[in-house]
Length: 348
Image 1: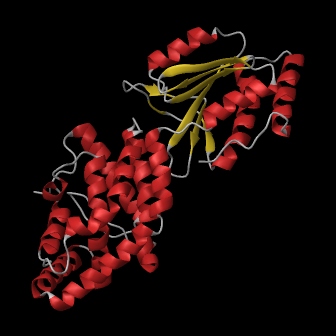
Image 2: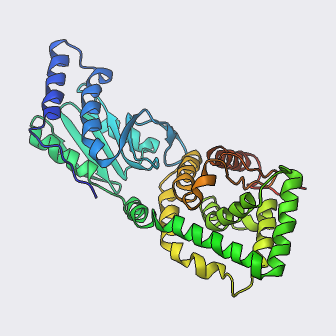
C-alpha cells in the first residue's frame, strides 16, 4: 500500500496556503473559488497512489439518490478510494455534513473540508475534526484520508498484483486443453464443429475456428463473474448463447477437463472482483468496472486476438466485435433489462 509522500514542508502545501491567502486578500472566499486550492493539493497528494481526482462525479448514493461529491478519488479500475466535499468558511459545516450524509453520501472514507477545518468520516464514523491553520494538521488529515483502504479494495489491490500474470497463463493453458480435446475427444470435436457452423450461419461465414475457441476460453473464465456480480444465478440456462457454449463444454471428458478443479486457482481472484464490485452502489459503475477487468485480465492469454475479439453474452444476440465495445453493449442491455423486465432474457 502506498504512503503519502507529500510532507508539511512540500511546495504544494505552501502553494495551497498562498492560494487561500490570495483569495482572502481579493475578498473572494466563496466555495467555488477556495475549493480549487484544496483540489490542486489533493490531486498532487493522490498522484503517487495512482489515483485521479475526478470532480463532480455523479453516482447513486445510499438509498438510491443521485449525488455528486466535489471530488472522487479513482484508480485505473474506477474504484472509489475516497470522496471529498468542499464548503466555504461562511457555511455551517456541521449542518452541511448532516445534510450530505442524510442524502446518502458514502461515509466509508469521506472528507469534508473548508479553509479553516476538515472533518473525516471512515467506516461510517467521524474519526477526525481538525483545524487547518498549521501545515502539520493538514498533512495529518491528508495522510489519514489517503492511506485508508476499505477491506474489499485492499484485497482487490493484492489480487491485481498476484493474478496479473496468473490469469493469462491459465487462459493459455485452457486454450491448450481445448485444442487437445479436439484431437482426442470425438464428442467434443463434433459439438465444437456444430457450434462453429451455428456461429458462421448467424454471424460470419468466414469466422475462423480460432475465434470460436477464443469464445469458449473467455466464457469459461468470465461466466462466474458475470453471473455473480449481476446476480444472474441461472445465467447459463437463460442466456441462449451461453447455453449453447455450455453444451459444447459438457462434452469434455473428465480426463481432459474438470471445470471446477481447473478454475479453483482463480477463486481468490474471482472473490476479490466480486467484493470490489460490491463497493459500487451504481449499476452503471459496476458495468464500467467489469469492462476494465475484462480488458485487463481476460484477454492477455490471446494477445493477437485481444484487440479484435470479444463475446457478447446476450440473450437476444451474440457477436464478435471489439472486446470493449461488445462487453459495453452486453452490460448496457443488462442495465436496460434491469430497468424494464428481467435481465438477460432468452430469445424466443
